[in-house]
Image 1 (cartoon, rainbow, N blue to C red):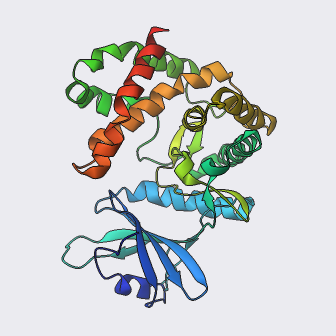
Image 2 (cartoon, helix red, strand yellow; image 1 turned 90 degrees about the horizontal axis):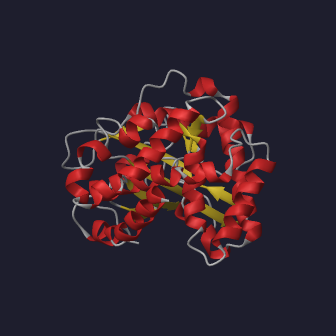
Length: 315
């Protein structure tokens, strides 16, 4: 962990805490920090300038509702001294204010370190609880006008797939067309019915799943928006498939999800087509990263992902 790039004392003073030990957790895109005061730990996210506050307000509304309605182990956004969940603050030597959010710290370690069938089942139950809540509270997002995890985002005319992928992927672009066509057919068949579509976390990889003293927790709702429930399922299933026992873990994960009376009840084979959607999302993210070590590190995964998507499209 490294020191923050600028003095955060004026920002923390807005929360009534000017003295704290601060370390950087992420500094590509949003700046994410761990804040430690006497007896307390927090997570502080300083969003990039110009971030979509419509989506951020939806995220905070969902987290607040989840905290009231469930016992899920999630980060709770905290108000500043003015009673607001979003603090607008202009860092030194910058001219545009950034949105900032302080949340309680979720103790534990990555769930991937304790993976097994019991953990896979826990993941299924947790994901089902998130989706159940989203299904029961459509009013949280029914007037939302921001970006969604839908057909427009995956392959619409303004998507990465349509605008940048031919350049970024070169000759590989054509080889992925059958996979994208399969995704198009699936979304046309599913539509946006409430049993398929609602608020989703959209980033349920193992870096955001924490196993700790309060049980399994989920963090980083920074991608949360309306989308297909199967997108969340496919993303976590893809993580589970990295284990030698991946097939068993995925079956246990999905069985537990369905047993928890989750809204989405499609067959596991139907979920698999959404690995095309998660793959497109990953590729768009990687190629959108600025040049640097993180981009180079993530580009290592691209050839294998392209191979998997190509094989799926040709199967």
